[in-house]
Length: 242
Image (cartoon, rainbow, N blue to C red; front, side, top):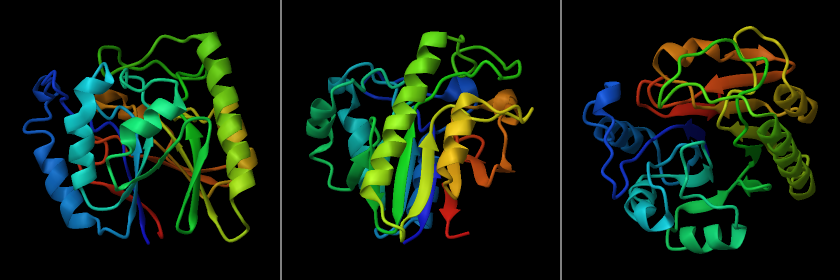
């Protein structure tokens, strides 16, 4: 059972918001082809936020069906553009219930699937972030209250992972915003993640000229991987086994 990840699928929703203005011509067809070629039904895929341009649940159904039609068992995570994703775990469970390949979602919680235990949260732009491009797919304003909330949510998810997992499970962290930047200045997010000690931490959010702002490689015993769609060349990133 291999573990893949893809972030920032930015599916069009019933609003039909395309990605042509960002140079993602024909999206999501190139991603669909690559996904269907790479992944088998027995593999696991982390969908690391910014899933759809929908703003409410009624607008996201077609995009969820698109994901469900792709091979693999999916674990979903909220991104900063996922306005359709509410705070009610019960409502999310009901929303995702028709889609058989959705094996779990991260919402102050962890997901165990096969040999993996996956914990994380959306996160936010940390104070340690270097200057990054702005715009619709760029940087988000720093908000101290969001940082506090996301540190707490990350802690709740990790605590849930510790309850659910055994020594045999491989620890994986899935977040949307980068928890560590190219300047390698530790953040509250990276400190919490590295204290937990997953083998890999996958994130998305960064695009175009901002891709280089995220740290990729090993730090504090954790391998950090960027898997936003354009950074990954519109192919899924295989996280494990290496």
